[in-house]
Amino acid sequence: VNRFEYDLKGFVGAEHCVATSSGTAALHIALHAIGVEAGDEVITQPLSFVATCNAISYANASPVFVDVDLETLGMSPVALKNYLVEYCKMEGGICVNTITGNKIKACVPMHSFGFPCRIDEIVDTCEQWNIVVIEDAAESLGSYYKGQHTGTFGKLGVFSFNGNKIVTAGGGGCIVSNDEELAKRIKHLTTTAKIPHKWEYKHDELGFNYRMPNLNASLLCAQLEMLSGFVSKKRELAANYEMFFKEIEIKFVSEPKESTSNYWLNTLLLGDLEERNQFLDSLNSNNVMTRPAWELMNTLPMFKQSEKGSLANALYLADRIVNIPSSVIV
Ligand SMILES: *Cc1c(COP(=O)(O)O)cnc(C)c1O
Image (cartoon, rainbow, N blue to C red; front, side):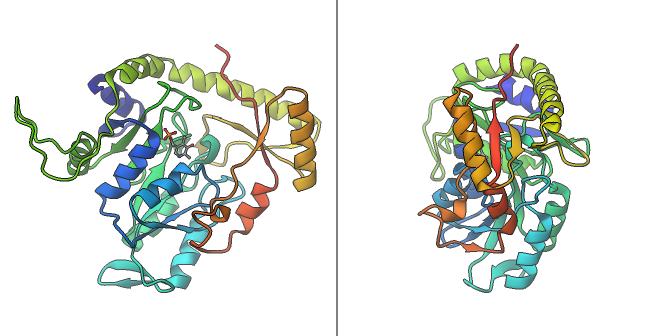
C-alpha cells in the first residue's frame, strides 16, 4: 500500500495519496473529512454514476444538481455560478441555500468518461463561495486539463480501481491532496482511527475500515506501470473511431479544448432518443455491447426530491449518449 500510494501520487503530481477499499469509500471519507454533516448540501451533476450521490447520502447530506456542459459532459461552471447567484447567499462566511436554509459545504464535479470538465473555473467559483471542491476523478486517471492531471485541482481528488476502470485491482480507490493535515486525517479515518502504538488498541474517534488490502495494492503497482501504455492504446482506438464515425456522419465525442482525455469510454451522440434506441437495439442484437448513459441522478427514487437548477443539457445528453466498446487490447 505504501509503495502504491507513492507511485500514484507521483503519476498524478499530488503531494499525498491515501489508498482505500473503493472509489465510493474514498468519496464518502473525503466528504466526511472536510466536515460535511447531517443536513448539509453538496453540489454535484445529474449525469454521473450513482456512487457520487450515494457517498453524499452516506455523509447524511443531500445532493444539489447543476447542469453539465455539452462539450465536456461534466459540470458546467456557468450553471454552477448561476445556481449560486440565484439561490444562495453567504452567511458568516458559509454558503447557504436560501430555498432550504441548509449549508452548502462541498461541490463534487465529475470528469465524465475521462473527459476533463472545466475544473479551474469550478474551483475559482467555489473559492468565492467558500465551498470545498472534491473531484470525482474515478474515470479520469491519465486525463489532463491544461497540462495538469485531473483530480489535483480541488482540495481532494478521488480515483477508483474497480474492475471496469482504466487500471484495476478488482476493487479499490484512493484520495489525493496537497493538504498534509487533511491527508493524515483521512489516513487515520480510513484505518479505524487507531492511535499508532506497538501494542495498544486505542481509537480516538469513529473510524472506518476503508483500507486497501496490500494484495490489491501489489496488483495496482504492476497496473500503474502499464498505465501510460493503456492510455496510448485508448487514444489510438479513439482516433480510429473518430475517423470511422466522421465518414458515416455519427457524432463522436472528442476531447474538449485544452484537455487530454484517457478516452476511458468512447462516446457517441445520436440524433434523438428514437435513433439512440434503434442503435442500441441493432448493435446489442449483433453481440456488440453498447449502452446508454446512466439514468440521470435527479430521476432516481433516492434523489428525486433534491434541489436542482435547470438541467437542459443533461436531459439532452441523456437521450443521445451511447458508449461503445473501449477495451485496451494489449
Ligand atoms: C466507478 C466510479 C465510482 C466509484 O468507484 P467504486 O470503486 O466502484 O466504488 C465513483 N464515481 C464514478 C463517476 C465512477 O465511475
